Image (tube, rainbow, N blue to C red):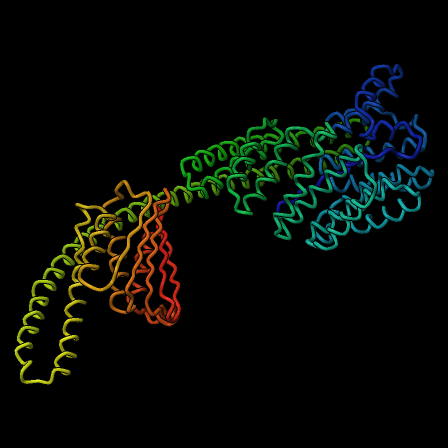
Length: 612
């Protein structure tokens, strides 16, 4: 489940603060950053300038700069209220560097001091930070106890803005625990407030969270698509939201929805938009994800060359990302070591205990660093294995394609052999059996004087009918040579011969068949028409057959109708009657469709659509 945990500094700023306090006035993101920059440039007092710089870099989430100004500030000159606020910024700094224990300690100190000195905003901001600390009891993000406290104090201080913050964090709390109904209720509660254009930041965050909820947990990509598109429309209303990282992530989310809806074309378009946006090195992983997504989409579209290209680019980005992560890990533990050394210089403590402490922290850092490097190496090996597996899949597809071509060639050879065999059988049937039946009739005529006329006439009629049917079937089986005449001429010749040899009239109508089709396809289609016509002659008791051939460009439509006695289609299909099952298999082999419509005493219509 792809969920991300953002700190509240992303949300603060959509609302105006209620308390008249310059610290939170400038910390509020609804106040343009240029105002704070001007204030810093015009400030002459060094202590005030450092304090404003601390606020400025906290808004920018620059941990190194925040650390610098925390060290420069001298708390001994601060009021009790400022000390409480300084504790809050210490907590926020430790949150940025992922030091959970110190973050929790400073936020708690700020909360208690703010409550003691009736500083409502420090109380609320501290609870906002505490609500987002990691819950180690549940091993999950966000802390329910502090969320409940935030709700209690935001109601106590009648601060609607923080009530909205609390509902948003509560929705995320449920989202991370897959408590989907409760999460939806929390987010929908926010949408019930009368939010304005300046509230676009919190509104965008709510839409994104609802998108994640419906996409990843409720498996409703259509609903998720609505919320991701709503979030996109807010970029114009709030320029701070319209940054490359947000736009790339939004396009990627929209593309994922289209992908799950099997709209691969729109998925491709939006993944390409996401990939086209230039991202800085801090979000290199997003660039790698975009390449992975495009590789997957082109694989689904059977564009394997492009799929392989983007997969290769993804691996290149991930290898670069691994190097940066390793460098960042080394810098992080170096900074931790330097901070410990600085504290040792500022605080007079026992030198032996300090050396042991530094040694312990350094050893632990090196062990952890080795663990990180080992993990990254294993992950890189796993990626290489994944690439090899995908290359194997591509090779399998190539082999499958070759086998398919061989199968088609075998089928064409079989059809040619069947054509020759049909020609031979038709000739034998017409020349041998036909002439034999004619001889029998002549010899039978010699018995006329010795038999009753009535019996003679009946028997003679039966022989005439048998002879007629044999001639009709023979002509149907030997109607033209497809390779020389083409499908349309062969069908017309078959219709003419059968009409001349029997009391069945066959009408042929065509459209768009001026050009020949591929020879083996014409042979197969003619044999299907021939077999269906033979079925009518043998079973339908019809006197009219209509054959319609229509070329629609990308499909060929064949419709054969008769005015015979009809039949129960369910019974005939289930028992493989009249060779219909065999014909249907031939149509399926051509990737076509066949529909049989018939009823007792209402004739039969057979419709076949073959892709070209």
